[in-house]
Amino acid sequence: MKGKVWLPLLPLLLLLGCGNESNRDYVRFYVWGDAAEVANYEAIAAKFEEKTGIRVSVEPSAGSYYDNLNIAFSSATKAPDIFFTESGEFAGHIATGKLLNLSAYIRDGELDVQSEANPNGSIALWGLNDAYRYDGENVGQGDYYAFIKDYSPDFVLWYNKDHIDEYNQENNLKKGDEGFMEYPSSTEALSWDEFLDMSHKLTKGNRYGTMLDHVPYQHAMEWVQQTGASLWTDGEKYLNAEDPNVIKAFQFFTDLQVGEKKSSPVIGPTGIGSGEAFANGNVSFVFYGSYAYSTYHWDSLPFSYGIAPAPTPTGGSDLYQGCSGMIALAINKASPVKDKAVAFLNYYMSEGNSYLAKKGFNIPGNRLIAESDAYRSPESSELRELNRYFLKLAETTHPLVRNRYLSQLTVEDKFGKYFSSYLSNPSSSSVANVLKNIRDDLKKEI
Image 1: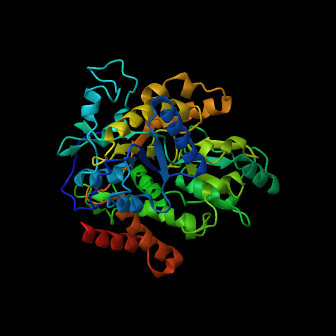
Image 2: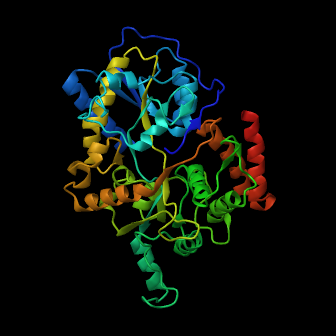
Image 3: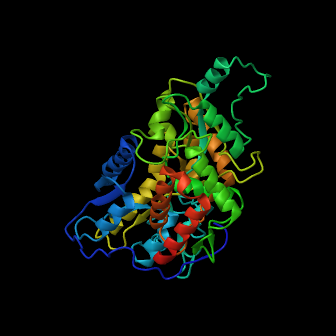
C-alpha cells in the first residue's frame, strides 16, 4: 500500500463484547460465501482438527455480514474468534479495539511469517498486506492486525463467446464486415463506450447483457479511480461529488441500467445472482475475481467463455486495470481461545492456502503458495491458464481508496439509498444531484 494513511479517532461503531467463555475449547470461524465456498472452509477446519485436535466451528453469515458481526460482538456467547475484515472496515475495527495484534505472535514464531529473524518462514505476506498494519497513528505501517487470506483483481470481465457468435450469425456478419463483433481482447481493455454498446447488443429477451449485483458500489468506486479522480476529498473525508470524472463514472454506472443502451437490470432482487445467471447462459458479461471459477462451477460451463481486463474509460493496455478488496482474516482480541485461533490462522495461511490453490480459488494470501506449483501449475490446463492470467493481471491491481472516517458499510448504505430511488425514476433528478445528496448525508455521519 503506497504512502501513509492517517487513522482519525472514529466514533464507537461496534459494541464491545463483554463475555469471556472460559470453558469453551473450540474456535468460532465466522465466514461468508455460498455452499461451495463454505465447504472449502469446512474442509480446511476438518484437516486442522485432524492434525491438531482443535475443533473449528465454521459459522456462515445469514444476511449482512458486518451487521451480523456487530451484533455478534455485543454477545457474550456468540462473538467470533476469527473473522473476515476488509480495508473499508479495518479502521473501525482498530478504533474499537476488536483486533488482536499479530506481530507478537510473528516474533515468537507462533505465526510462521518470514521476517529478518525468521527468513525461512512458511508464510510470506504480499506488500498489499500493509493495508492491515497500524502503528498507533498510521494505517500502512507498524504492527500486523490481519492477514490477506486471498485476493485477485475483483472485476475482471468474463464473457460468453457463444452469445457473440450468435449475434454475428443472426446479423449475417462475417469477420471483416462492418459491425462484426469481435471477442474482447485478453490484454487490451474495452473502453466504457465499447462495453456499453456490446453489452446492449447482446441483451436479448430474458437475457441480460450484464449485471451489477455483485458489490455494485465498489464497482463504481473502481470506475472513479480508473478516471484518475478520487472519490473522496479533504483527506478521504468527504464525497468528491462535483468532480466531473466522479460524475462521469456514476453516469456510466447509471447508463448500464436505465440509459438508451441499458443492458443490466436495475440493482435489486433479480431472483438469481450474476454468477449463477452466467453459468445458465442468462447474462453475457459478468465482473468477478478468479474465485468465481470454483464458486459457481464455471469449470463445467455448457458454452465457451473468455476473460478480459476490466473496461476502462478509454480502453487500451496502459491504464489502471482493476482493483482488489483484499479480504483478510483477523482474530478477536477478546477471544477466550486466541492461542487456538492463532494456530488455526497459521494453518490456514500455509496448508489451507495450498488446499485452496488447487481448487482454483483466488491468488493465495501466502506469496510462497502463489509462487508454487500448487497454484501456478495445477493439473488442469484450464485452471493453470486462469491462475497465471490473474496473477499477471494482479500486477496492475490497486486497492480501493476508502473513506477514512466512515465504514464501507455506511458508505454503501447511503449510495444504495439514493441510487435505488433515482434508478427507479431517473427523470426525477440527475447523477450530479444524487451525488450531492449522498455527500451531504454522509457528512452527517462523520
